[in-house]
Length: 313
Image (cartoon, rainbow, N blue to C red; front, side, top):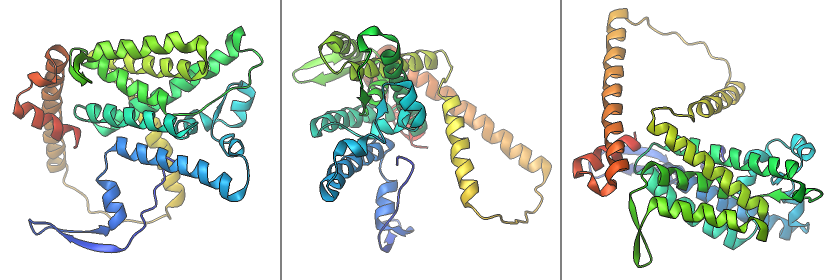
């Protein structure tokens, strides 16, 4: 579901104030302008409408629909429905469950995307969903207290927690306003994780364990990124191969004729581009280190603009 979007709408010609003609469909153009966190939010909202309206309109229990998308707590059931390791994140148990997850997703996403690219956001979110789901599954398989309990997991909390804890770990000294107080991000991160730990024996143990799994992923990802290692690259490459596989299956075979490019010119251009990319990455890393040490507000206007442009390129 997360990978599908149907752009429906009439075609329009959009002329900007600068005289640039942008052609496209109304809804698809609007969709393209949304941030990746907003797209995930809208997909979760649509999924909630589907899980609420379809059972009502066709007269079957909601549980029958959710059974195909929620992550089961037993290995046998999971092997029968392996896609649930991701699909569980797009469905929610109640409106309040959806609402608070989406609030956290939106504001956490805003903070994240001010500093990092949308691809890194996707990596952190979905790796958080995967690790949170695995922690849930392994906990119900290994701990005696869960023996005989037929539990399932739904909700985006593991991915949302991964994003939030990533930010708290990467720039722990950054202050945010909470009601009437300024609070450092590391303090918020510790509060959320400790709250989940305390609440495990009091109900919804599987959900809290998934939150902790997602938070652990976010913490490790940020710590490794500070050392120069992006642990999400393997996931990113796997997703690219997955999408390429399906795009090749759907695309008809075409024969294309391409003029031979001149060796020295093309190699020179690629060298220049690679040099520019390296220099831009060095500047970005220096700014992110400054944020980590002194907070976002310590940046100059020029540094903030550079970081914003880099994150959206």
